Length: 318
Ligand code: ATM
Image (cartoon, rainbow, N blue to C red; front, top):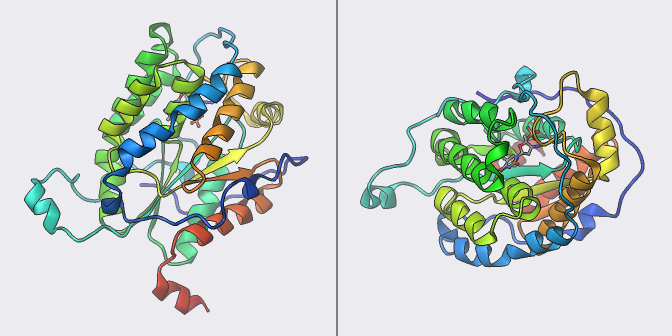
């Protein structure tokens, strides 16, 4: 299962645009997942923007040799691989009788070196300190089947098949991750914090890989369905800075995507920023060029402002 502690993090440099302010602080928090049934279509409609925005800014990437995949790394970053309960596959009549899940689904997105893993651990620790049953996981991966696919994809083995094939592989991995890990956790009322999710497919394969947005939206509708993030934290920093951080910390070869060139990573950043602007109610753009403590605080502000922490626990803390 996932990690529950927070290690230290490194400190970066100058600031980029006022990221948090780009997102609407007044945004409505999380409606209950079940109440969002109609949102899939509306959302799919709203999505073409990032793809278009990034298309113009997305020069084609340099070719790079396939590299080994990232490993799970520190124990604290380990994905959840065991379902807490069985996936929700029961007939509709029984599903209707189930209590409404109280869990919340938070995703972290951003380019290379943005500090997602560090911030995920810190957010988990803060949620747990606030009395929330919080589970950390990641994509690609987060379940036994999806971790196998992670290795396949990040090794670069599927790169010759093109972004469309990669998009379908990410979607297949996501379907397993949702069934085995995310939905069971949400169903028992846990909060799930996921390092990357469907927005990465929109950006990497859609905006930068030029996969037809209709296919990206269809894959998302079929795999994600109503299990959409309540809040997406987009960690934003200049591509040069992110790549420099990644190079400094990396003790291994770059993976399939890390090995892309600077122009790719610049376009990636623009696509994530466009996504944040296109869905301000769900997305919070966080200026990740600051030191890790400051970023952690900005993330916590966004989470507390947009998602309701359990009332009982809040009372106990005050
Ligand atoms: P991490 O490095 O954040 O573990 O992610 C693995 C890579 O998978 C990441 N590339 N880099 N750097 C982004 C890529 N990816 C996609 O291209 N599409 C997806 O849907 C997901 C979840 C990840």
